[in-house]
Length: 259
Length: 264
Image 1 (cartoon, each protein chain N blue to C red):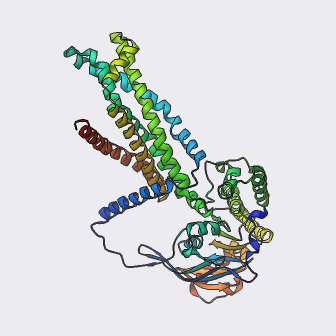
Image 2 (image 1 turned 45 degrees about the vertical axis):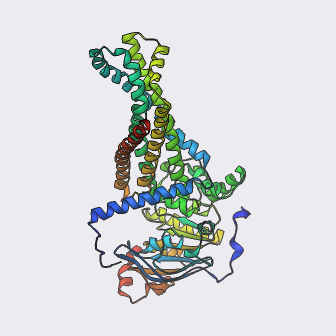
Image 3 (image 1 turned 60 degrees about the vertical axis):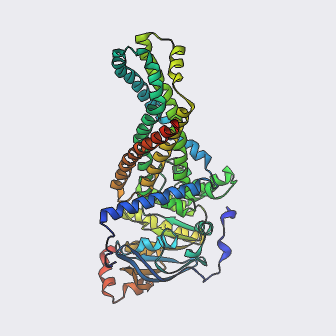
C-alpha cells in the first residue's frame, strides 16, 4: 500500500485546492461566474446549492474533465490547465472522484471495478498486492462480501459505497464527492454520511462534497459553501451560512430538511 | 445560471450541426491514427474485443453467407439456362462472391450487429459517466475503449469476410452439386479460374475498409452520445445507418478504382 501513499508531500495548513476567479459557460449559458475557493489539508468543504447551480461543473474542472473559460485552479500545488496529459494523469491518481451515478463499469464485477485503476496505472503490480488493496478498501466501506458481485446486483447505497471504495483505491489525498446522497433513502444517506466522515478520519483526506442535501452538508462539511447562479453566496461554518441574511440562502434553508 | 446572447448560425442550425459533426468525426479519426501506434497497446482488450465482435458474429455470418450462396445460384440458373450457359455458374459465383458479395454482405451484417453494439455500449458508458470515471482514474478512455474496438473490428470483419467468401462458395456448391452433379474440385477450379490476384486484394481491401468504418463510426457515435437513454438508442441507430451509407460509398469508390486499374 505504501507505494501509492504520497500523502506527506504537502504541508499542514497548505491549501490542497486553490481556485481564483473561475468562470465557465456552455454555449449561451453562464454556469460558473467567478468562483474563489481554498480547500485546506484534512478539511471537508460541502458545496451546497440547488440543481443546475454549477456544482458538478466545478468538480469536473478541478479534476480536468472540463476546461475553465477563465480563472486559476491549483490542485496540490499544480496549475491544472498547464499540465501535460501525463502530469494531469499523475495528479489524478492523487484525487479520488465519487460520481453521482457511481459510474461503476457494468461489464466488470466489484473486484475488477476496484482493481482496474490500479492495474492500469501501476506496472508489474503483483496480484497479491492488488487483492490486498481491494480487500482493504472494501472493508473500509463495509462491503467485503460483495467482492464478486456485478454492479447490477447491488443496491443504490451499495453502489455508492463501491464508488467511494474505487475513489479510495489509489490512496488519494483529495476526494471529490458528487451528490453522495442523491437518490438514497434517509437511512442509507446517513450511512453514506458516516462513511464520508470515517474515510476522512481514517485516510486523512481533504474532501469537496457537492450536495443539495442539507443533512449531508451539515454533517460532513467543516465549512459550507453556498452556491447560486455560479457564484458562492457565502462560505463559512454551517451556522454562519445558516444565519446569513441573504435571501437566496434563506430561501434554500428549510428547517424541515434538517434532522 | 445566466443566459448569454445567442450566437447567429453560419448557415442554419441543422447545416451548422452537420458540418460540425463532420469536422468532429474527422478529428476523432485523426486522433485514432495518432493513438493507435502509441503505447500501451492493450493487447488483451483487443483479443477480448475480437472475441466479442468477431467470434460471436461467426454464426450469423455463416448462415447468411451460405443462404446467399444458395439463393444466388438459384436465381442465376434460369437466366444462364436460357443461354445454355449453366456451366458458367461456378465462375459466376466465384466472381460474384470474391468481388462483391463476400465483403459487402459481411459489411452490412456487421454494421447492424457490431456497429450498433459498439455504439450502444460506448453510448451507455458515456451517459452513465463510466467514460469520465475512466478518465479521472488516469486511464485514457479513447485508447482503452476506442482504439481497441476499432482495431478489433477491422481485424474481425476482415476475417469474417474471408469466412463469408468460403461459406458463400460452399452454399453455391451445394446447390450446383444437387442440380448439376459437379465435383467439388471441378467446381473450385471453375470458380477460381476467373478470379485474379487483383480480385483477392480488392476483397481484402474492402473488408478492411468496412471493418474500420464500422468500428470508427460506432465508437464516434457512442463516445459522443448525450441525452441519457434516448442518446444511447440514437447513437446505436446512427452508427448503423451511417456505417451502411459509408459502406456503399466505399464500395462504389473501390469498384471504380479497381476497374480503372484493371483496364490500365
